[in-house]
Amino acid sequence: MVRIDRRLALALTRWQHPTGLRRWLAVAGIVALIAATTFLVWQTGGIRYAFSHIMYVPILLSAALFGPGGGVVAGLAGGVALGPGMPIDTATGETQAFHNWAYRAVFFLLVGGLVGMLGQAVARLLGEDPVSGAPSQQPLRQTLERTLQPPLPGQVPRRFSVLVAIFDNHTELVNTFGPEVGARLIGGVVQRLQVSCQGDAEVYHLHGERFAVVVDGERLDELRARIRAHAMEPLIAGGVPLYVNLTFGRADYPEHGASAEELIQRATIAADLANQRGERERVYDAGSDQTSRENLVLLSGFRQAVSRGELCLYHQPKWHLEREEVVGTEALLRWQHPEHGLLTPVRFIPQLESSHLIHELTPWVVAAALRDVAEFRRDARAWHVALNLSARNLNDDGLIRVLERGLAETGTSPEQLEVEVTESAVLADPEQARRVLGRLRDWGVGVAIDDFGAGQTSLGYLRRLPATSLKIDRALIQQLGGASPDDRIVESVASLGHRLGMEVVAEGVEDRATLAMARGAGCDIVQGYGICPPQPMETIREAFAPGPLPGRVEPSRYEA
Image 1 (cartoon, helix red, strand yellow):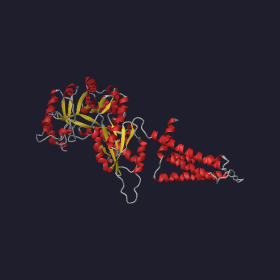
Image 2 (spheres, rainbow, N blue to C red):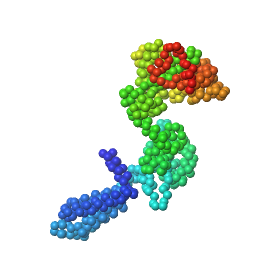
Image 3 (cartoon, rainbow, N blue to C red):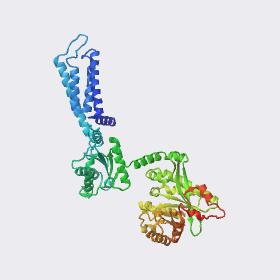
Image 4 (cartoon, helix red, strand yellow):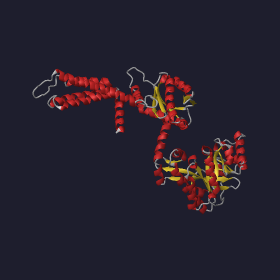
C-alpha cells in the first residue's frame, strides 16, 4: 500500500507545475470538468442533490497540478459556477440564500488552497534526498524540461550540459569506516559540489553514489576546473581526512539528446564507461552506447546460444621450433550468432565475466576442449590443448571439480591439458592463483603465464607460481627487429623463462622474419597467424595431417 501511495505521489509531482502544451491541456481539462459538473448539477435537478460534490474533482486536480494558487482559482470558479445562478431545485425555481452559496464557495477555496499546500509539501519531501538533503531525480527532470522549452522567435537555443558524478570509492570507505561515515561522506560530496558551483548550477542527488549538475554551456569549462580543484581535497569524516574519488560523465544539449531522460541516461552511460576505464571524465559517445546495448542483447541470449549449439571451439596451433612440429593448440571460443555472424570472445567474454554466466560457460568449454583432445588422440597426435582462465575462474571453487570430472569422464591424461592465465588474473589474488594452479600442476596439467610483458607481474610471484611455460605478449614480439630495446627484452624474458625451467612461447608471429627473430631470441614455440590462424578442429586436422611433410609447416605458411 505504501509503495502504491508513493508511486501516486511521484506521478502527481511529475505533473505539478506543468509547462508548455501540458499546461494548456491541464487548464482545458479542468475548465471542461467544471463546466461538465455545472451542467450535470443543473440537469439532475439542482443544488439540493449530491451531484454538486463532483465539483471537488476539478478543484483537487487543479491543486495537485498547480499548487495552492491553482486550487484557489479552481475553488473560486467552482463556487461561482454553483453560486446564485444555480437554483436549489430546477423544477420549482427555488434560489439559494446568500449564506448558502457563499459558504460553499469559501469551503471550495479552503479545500483547494490546503490541498495545494499539501501537494507542495509532498513534492518537496519526495524531491529531496533524505541522506544528502539535495534535490533528487524528479526535480532534475523538471528543471531540464523547463530548460528544454523551445526558444521564442529570434532567441538562440540555449546550450547546456548534464554532468553525472560517480563517487566510486564510496563502497570501499563504507566497508572500512561504517555506514554512518558513508552517509556523512555523501552529504560532504554534495556540499563540495555546491561550493564548486558557486551558485552557477544546481546539484542533484540521483541515487546512492551518483550526483548530477546542469551546467550552462558558457560556464562549462570554468565549472569543471573548479570541481576538479575541489575534488583533490580530502573530506573529514569522523575526524579522519578521507580521499574522495569522483568520476564524471557528460552529455551535451542538443548534440547528445533532446529530452531530460536522454540527457540523464547518456551522461550516466559516459560516467559508467569512464569509471570502467579508469578515466576522470568522459563525454558521451554514441558508438560506445551502441556497443553497450548490443552487448546487453548478446548477454540476454547467451543461455539460449548454449542450448541451441551456437558455441564452438576454434584451435590455433603451437609450432615447436626445434622439433619442427605442432605440439599443441590453444582453444579459442567462438559464437555463431544467427544475426551477427561469427563472434570472437572480445565481443561477449568481458560481459560474461562481469556476470555469473561465466560459471555456466566454463564447464561447457572444458567439456568441448577435452572432446577435441580425444579426437586428436584418435589421430595419434599427442597434442595438448590450452584453455584460457580468467580471475573469476580462479576464484570459482567449482573449477577444480569441473576439470577433475572432465578428465575422468574422457579418460584424458592431465599432461594433454594446459591452462593459460594472464598476469592480471594472477595479480587479482596471487595466493588464490598459486593454490589453484599448484593443485592443477600436481595433477600434471600444464600452466602457462599468458601475455607476459603486457602487465606488471612481480618476478617474486613468477618464481612462486607453478608455471610450465611463459607466453611473451604479442606487442613485444611484433616489435622485434632493428636491434630495438624490445629485442633485448624478449631475449631477457626467454633467458629468465629457461632459468625457471619453463618453455617460452612467442605469440603474434605473423611472418617469416618475425619467426626468425623469435628463434634468435631463444623462444621455443611460436604461435600466430603466420603459422595458422584459429580454425575449426577439422580444418586443423586436415592442415596438419600426416603426409609428405608430416607435422611440418610449409614455408609459405610463414607469410603474413
